[in-house]
Amino acid sequence: MPAEDTVFNVLYDKYMFWSIIVGILTFGWMFIAMLRYRDGVEPVENMDKYHIEVGSFPVDSHNTKLEVMFYVLPTILVVWLTMMALASNTAVWTIPDDDQTFNVDIVGKQWFWEFHYQEDLTWEDESSSIDVNWTGDKLMVHTHGSEATNVTIETDGVATEYSIDLAAEMLTLNNTYFDRELHSVITVYDADKNLLHTWEHLPTGTILSSAGGQHLIIPCDESVTLDLYSRPHDNSNPAYVGVQHSFWLPEWGVKEDLVPGLEGGTVMTFFPDDSGTFPIRCAEYCGLDHSKMIGNIDIVARDGATCEVDSGIQKLESGDSGSSGGGY
Image (cartoon, rainbow, N blue to C red; front, side, top):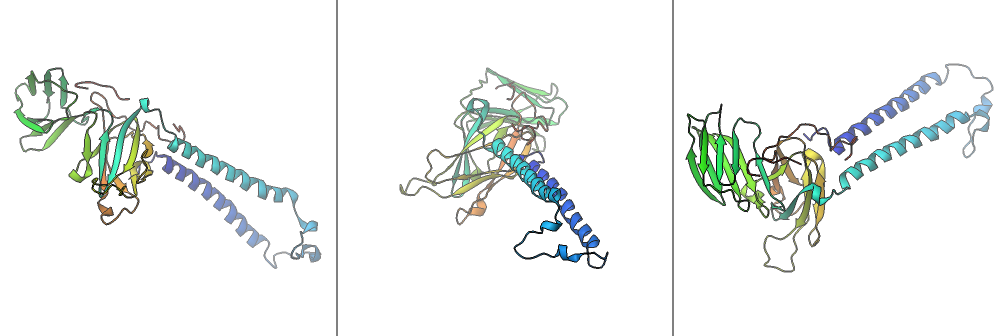
């Protein structure tokens, strides 16, 4: 179910409202006319003047004001609906300044998505009482009020597990340097190995892939710009440039084609204002395993920030960056 505040959902609701109004007026007048002017209700004197001949205008029996209204009101309605539609196009197709957006390259291959990060992102779960603070060469994991027992720190693919000091309800590691150039993930578990909390740093240049079950991770409450490219899985055939895909985010009602051979790619923008995990789909038949062109997008809070629900930037009525903390 897409979010209710997307451009397209708001536009749909507005069109539905005016369609119902037009339907009530049209069918209401039709039934009134059927009942009021049906044959035999009232005898009509001088019926000759109501006689209609093909190709001639009934000059003797017409209502100029009513006829003008029949032209003017539908014209006003069509103009109004057109203005609403154009407003939605402006909100969708206006590309924000790159300096004010979070940028990721999306590469469609056969048959999976790759997510290439053009800037870094540090995020942390905001739904638990656990807090990770990693600055300089000191790492602290506060677990007050939780059932956490273990912490796993994975840096550049190398994982190390630590036990939490249950008396102090925290883990402190000195001489553990935070390197912004390395992909780091901190996960906190309870005694039954249930995941309680995640902290992650994605450096510029990180590549995630839906083929490995990885999600596209995007910060909330920031305008996002996705540059979309269709590319072959390998370069074994220089003449092959890939196939057509269409990157679709149903939650935000946005979809854009990935065109093979288009070096500059295509662009999609959206504004995620609610945290959570949402689906990614390919809306263009792209070959034998088109059904595998699926994935997920995680909307998260930057480290030290929160996601405020219903910020309303994506709403049609308004039309048109996270804070940092810890290791960010």
